[in-house]
Image (cartoon, rainbow, N blue to C red; front, side, top):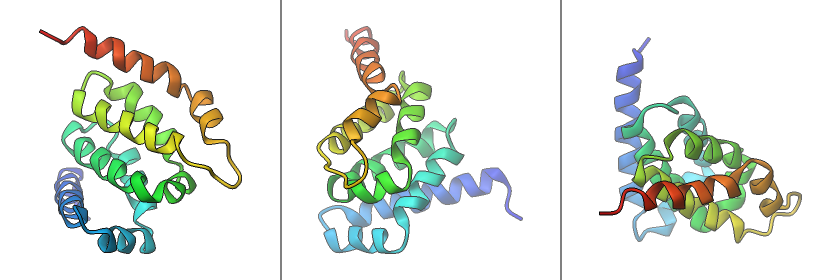
Length: 141
């Protein structure tokens, strides 16, 4: 069995590789989706909820996936994970920014069974987006 530290390093490396493989390459993005990648990235984000280095890369990958594959992320439970991630890491600018972009992409989505905007509001998403603005106003020089 691998230790948590080893698994953390592995997930960080894999997420980084996946992110770079999808840059300007939609076929690779599709490949991730076909192989249950949305579920895997959402689950890893849930697992490493306190690890900023891993979360920076996973949130970037979620943002990348949400551009074209928001519905698959929604099926994987991304709203719960994203709102929890924002609540926990709101002071980490890169994670917060990725989550804001993710929320934006999700909000543009028309889902067949879910009103995404209502769901984001219900999960405290609007409050978190407002907090993001307030939090990062205080950090400007």
